[in-house]
Image (cartoon, rainbow, N blue to C red; front, top):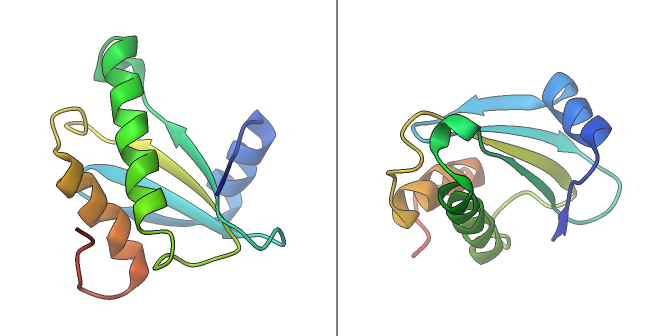
Length: 108
């Protein structure tokens, strides 16, 4: 798994990708030719200070890493947090990310 770092990569995925609005996060996905998952995480300053925002980012990245074998491969993903994501547990974030898997089994 790699990270999306450039603004243009984020913009390309958000403007041209599929959008899934979930309870705690919004996920944009766009197929790529890299052969691996590339992930970008965006957390608003409204979510809290830098410590809280970085904790949210770490939780999202870990949930994706833990369930990467179940997620679509060769895809660029941008995860944007929604209101309440800061108070969400790791399992709630993981459940929302696993909803992309297409099965009802929750990763634990």
